[in-house]
Image 1: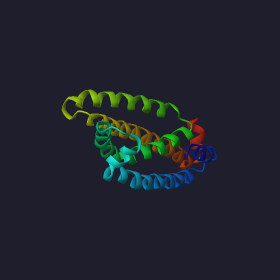
Image 2: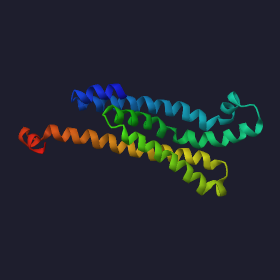
Image 3: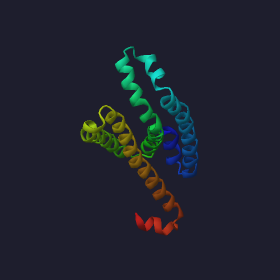
Image 4: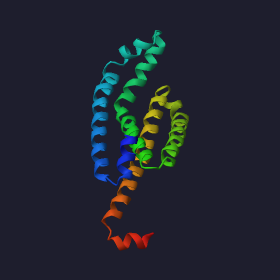
Length: 161
């Protein structure tokens, strides 16, 4: 998405960015349906593909359904984050990475005492969702600001500079 976005952003083809976003989100949604379903409905079998101990498999079987239900957030996050980077704003994705870390630590610290190990899964979900909201807002703000510049009369754009 990043190189596609940057090429169209540089060329001022903002409608193509919107179309590319739709395609990428449909691919991400398809991945969510497939992999999220596997994580929700057969977590123990998935975990047993990579883990051998029953305790480890049991912990992973707790973790996977929670993350599987919200894995679309990380799928969409990848799309929007690369789109924001492609529009020349790497600072926002960097800040969202910091926000992810802060959210993970905060959620685990707040909930480990009440929900135990599941706090790690909730921390992932909160981190993905927070970063997604930041990048999604930045994506649309950047795109809308350039679209509005195109709709202004030519004299207004020159006067704004």
